[in-house]
Length: 204
Image (cartoon, rainbow, N blue to C red; front, side, top):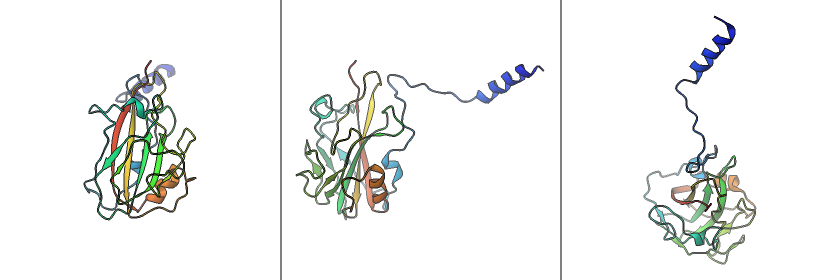
């Protein structure tokens, strides 16, 4: 068998059984890095814990006013109160962003454990006036607090994961902590976790 023919056959055999799906308009290329929820194991798995928002339609679509194309207001959130929780933290990430890691849209922690909701439009800044005592980290747009969905046109439907963590108490992190520092600080401190996924696609 000629050497070139043998190499061609080997390449064909090696490729059998594997397909490579190209990114499409409706299915963006996902970041290879896991979302924060996948990097933390709660101390008490199985606790009923749900987060809801009136800003997300039944089909998952996020209202325009909560995107950076609209009013850029954080969505109202309501969650199941977890017994023993001393604080809550929320991370909002987009794994469909065309980058090596999910795009961070919101980091907020030390939400008082007595709360089970956040109103629409939590003020931006490191130390928002409400909820009292909460701290906000820097999003990937470079500002402190919430930065709404703003997927580039032509990149299809993006999925925005609102991940909430019930913690055994407040964290000692300062606002200059990045997402990795926040996730590391929460490890071993999470009683329960949940998420709500909203979607948004830019108009062409």
